[in-house]
Length: 261
Ligand code: PGA
Image (tube, rainbow, N blue to C red; front, side, top):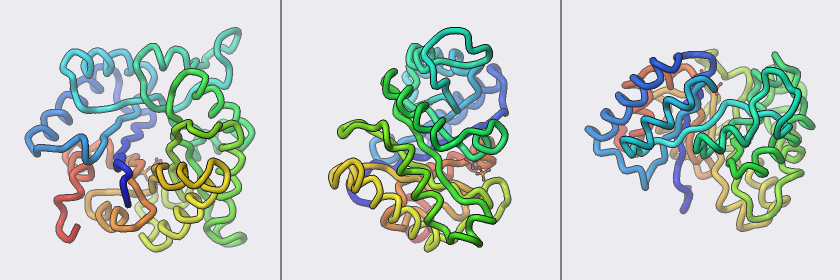
């Protein structure tokens, strides 16, 4: 990890309504403040459900909280007859900094393909959002192709619409590690993240390869975050289940204080 500001991102998935989101973000900010969290050293972001975003924006803006936020998905289209969809323009209007794209649950339950992911990445850029592009292999892929081949292919396709100079965050999330309690080993994750960084360098140039943050996700918790953050190509984490536990998530964000790092 050199010169890249680590990002600890909480993907709430379909949890916490707008009232709960206000209480959570407020308490998270207090906890980080009490721990003297240095936002310049580690960026903290949350990804609440769409219906929470306005509440989170109001709180973050009025109290100037050092917490970034974003949507969990966006539409490939900007506006029009797409019932149930949310435009990147709406996320931008709520001051979202990020948007998660291609999470494995979107790929699995909403049949999002690599092509869909690429069109959504393009939509994110049209609205000044930084895409957090998720890639990862299933247990079956792991057996058939090894760990890197599928995530590498997914990333190559996702980066197709990215022009040099645009910021993107990559999240490597092995599907078998998500919500399973069985995280990848730091060495496994490092190997894939290095391969993903090589793709970024190849497609977007060496500078982008060196500057792009690559996160690991899949059963991250306070007890294992430091071991991932010690790896050269891992610049943070996309946290699901543990991001809903206030103390646990704050402790993940404070990984530099953990023994041995
Ligand atoms: P998990 O989820 O931390 O609960 O494994 C990670 C994710 O889905 O982003």
